[in-house]
Length: 277
Image 1 (tube, rainbow, N blue to C red):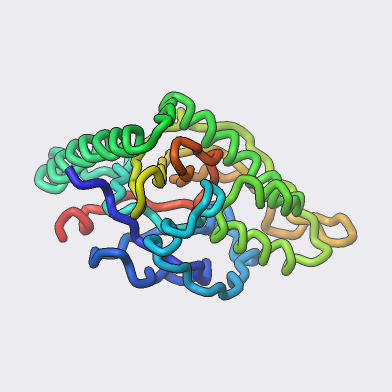
Image 2 (image 1 turned 60 degrees about the vertical axis):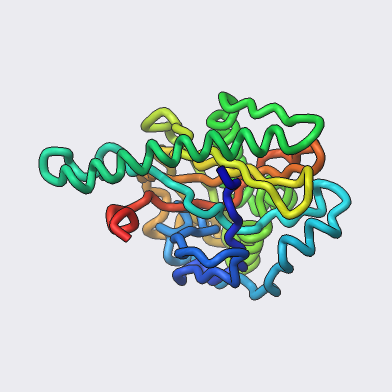
């Protein structure tokens, strides 16, 4: 089974539908985002992402790479990443049996493909990396909380340490543009147990280089409160909301050396229309 291919993307305006740059292979684009869900629900905080030059070909970058940190942290979402809709949003088996069965079949095939891709990721490099799949969900929860807390506090140093380039650029723009305003993010509780819905690996053009991405569904009640320079609460902020997010984590591999998990951004559930195409 051939390893997953990579779809390259460039940073984009966070409130526009993303457009992929020229991929390594011709594929159907997927919806994805480097904008966290909480920010998507705060129109007053939406700021354009500064333009950045497109990244070079992964083949060229792989040949020139001398360590895991030389591999770009933002190379897009792996092709054919499948995110099963949550139970409440899936087609009902008794109302839309054909659509539901298609989703279930696609989920099964995706799981088999994902397991094969992780085997390729693990055994294509020496020393072989430890997958530690049980640690993915707890790591996602920790990074999720660190990310939002650091953003609210304007802690760019922490964001730089835990975020890929695309989402980091978006956060930096928002922090610069909010001026003297102060923000406070609060996680009230997790409404459901986090679930890893995708865990995949891919190889780059040369031996020993690869990428691993995991998608974790996080459902929580959270709030973002904004304060004016006088310390007054900005009207319309601070309300606790139930939010469902699909957080995308990734780590890079170079000859057995892995980078820490980083937050790449968020993605969306696979829709029935995607299955029909």
